[in-house]
Image 1 (cartoon, rainbow, N blue to C red):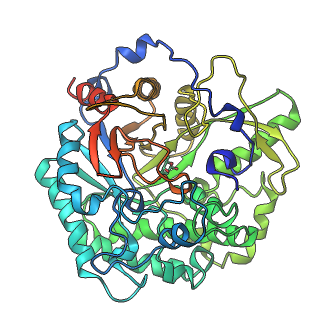
Image 2 (tube, rainbow, N blue to C red; image 1 turned 120 degrees about the horizontal axis):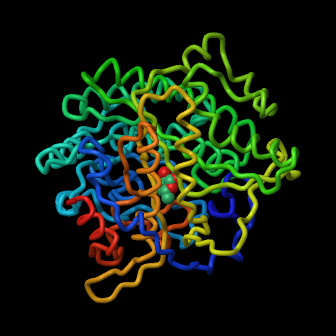
Length: 474
Ligand code: FCB
């Protein structure tokens, strides 16, 4: 079975030979001189999470099952055979956890709503206890002086809806609209910052084409249908938030990667352009009224059968901000892989550091991707996720994670450079607050700035968390 690390950019370059190479630490003077105040007093500093990854309580207080409950219980595709049944038990520990977040000086908390906690059947009857839970999260944040940022969908579709075809069924637009309406009407009085979808390319490609995430299909047809339906939901969700939430700040998030070329030859440039169309253009261009990048990716024409008259107009929405989530760069070269005919190549080995996911640490990539997206008429950018999985060295009450500290310093100094170059990037959400269930990778991949022992739910603030605490106080 391939993993997300190998699937990297949909294209299956095997990088397993590189996984054991932690690389070396680079001294970066600019990064060391960083201080939060350099980003300006209005810059948003947050930590990001996703419901299925931290909440646990998968069947508690009336919650219905989601595709991730089903996938982790039945498909045997999670590396360590784990699931999110208990995970960090944030459902019960949110008060202590949010107080901890506050103690690290973060001003914002990004979380998602588990659709099947609100609507156990996906549509219809509302589960009051689900609403109560998110009310408590929101109220606790506000009491602590933390701004709540809601993401409506972070990959956990109600299982009942998957049984009706999930994202591949156009009805999902109505289901998602109903769900969005309920969330905005219940939480919009206190929550002003909203994100519609988390990385639509990831959940459509990994879930319906590569089969390595829930619901586990390998079908080009389901993939293309789900892309169009997710794009319709992205703008429909934006409109519903605008309608129901006064003074809302509305965004949505995209996974994105800077694409380099392996060799400066026309065939390589073309391959990189195809990768760029798939990875960076597919979801933003329809929002801006530019349609899908069919010119560069002719196989997208197969999507036409899912497009109805009037859809191209419906795909547009005037977002207040775009959330960019950047983890790795891609080095394009031609290949025989169907449809895309391009793949990701290895960087040169010299002086390259990799995370435990096998993702190259390439801080300049975040600067370049901000520059690349700044060519679009976008009002404001948030870095809505960025972070790294590294092995953690626990010694008593300490967790020393120098590589993660350095990762954050280096990426943040590139974001600062982008800001100083006039790119309107106005916030940063570290991925992630607490070590959690990392999808098909299970619990082995640790991204948290707070360590969690899932055997006893003991949290330990890592050196990276302490680094943020001090950085954010300056
Ligand atoms: C992003 C996901 C997030 C987490 C990080 C590592 O693509 O949005 O949930 O898995 O990757």
